[in-house]
Image (cartoon, rainbow, N blue to C red):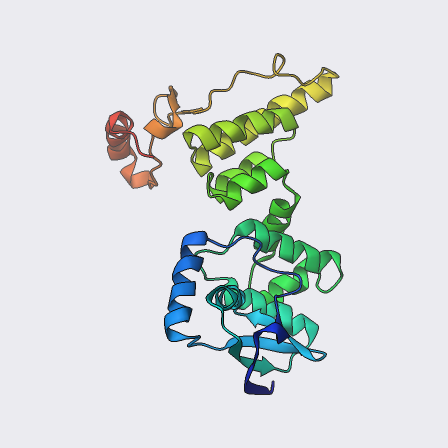
Length: 267
């Protein structure tokens, strides 16, 4: 069983997580938290681990920053006895369900742990209770170019859209569609269709030994079209609906799908 003790210590003895899981702080949230701590103090102690004669935060990075902002000299902490790998797992578990967690900061944190050999992707997924696919997606985020990471951190684009567009094999094409997604919005399904169509075209050009350029690639609209299962007509994806039918309901579905495709567009 992990031992713990409750202490009140000088704030200068408490250091931020290393590496930090959170690289950016929401200013409005921090202003509110600072006001609360200034008026009421720290209600929930920070969770820490000993590092020599100081302490490193496991859970409470925002509270530590707000306590500095509020001018506190002493803060309450709970000190736990954990191995390095247990520290990282506890830190991730403490942050996983928080709405303000930045996926880019989180991804860089996980990538560093794996790069430094603290975990493999498989062992991290097991310890954190995540799927290997989830960990792989975080490693993809950590590998994204800076313009994509910045847009994700600033919540200018949906994470699912960014992950789909990141898989477009040509960088200039990827950048073109990504900036359009930031500017005009894009659904995950639309991003997937664009990724599949563009990569198919890119592979065909490469097989032919042709250069991949904006001129040689097909002019795929930002809102892609998909074939209607009933009529075969190519319709804008945001004007269609996906329905699940059984064989017994096929005739009724044939009639209904016409009305569905004429219905008000669904985002």
